[in-house]
Image 1 (cartoon, rainbow, N blue to C red):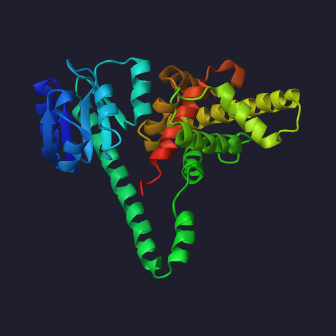
Image 2: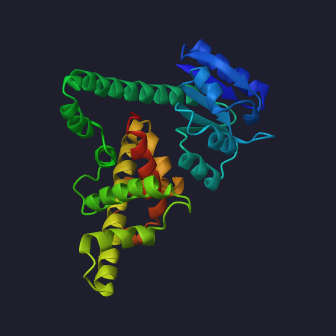
Length: 310
């Protein structure tokens, strides 16, 4: 793996380089003290697989830099920050970062996160190589290739099913609703590129209800379906919280718990649910504060990451 490190603190850069080299995690492709000193072309030229970038820098911060290097840069991004603002963290994940490393730097945390991101890169490359090999084999018949290629490329639904399985909610009543939401968001981003921001939950459920019922139904029927769909989704999200909390209770280092619990839910929500499960308490969904928009938004971007860029 080739790493590029951007941080205005030379001590942090040195520490990260030392960890990467000492643990044989990869090669340092370059370093910079500010986001103004890099762009997508430079990172591509350096064959950068993983960019480690500080959130707060004097001239151009990490979030601005990520916006600037996209879409040219195809590698993975790990954000480094001593700031724990939920809003900034959310923006980072929306822009496509994989993980946050908190300051002061913890060697064990750095090694663990880099290994996870490296493994994801290797997995995505393996999937991509398989699809390319299949395309080459089928190239003798161009028509057949065209028809088969579409079926071989994983869709947002395919990656969504993998995620929902990991989250323990396959078969739940809201499972199909969540897949429909992912499909709607994928089409929405392709046509509108989220120019006005991520769609409101109300608008998402409205579109899904209208698509399901058709144009000939009354407004009251649409509203009933919207409410029913939202309730199914919220109950399913609650079951996902239960599943992840159970995994964390059994093994705090469980990779599924480690990866998804802090992204999909507030830390306090997960911690409180784990405490309740430990006491064998069963609370209803109305007693648990769940941020459905955060869950759906994160689920969508995580599902997109599982789709190889062909």
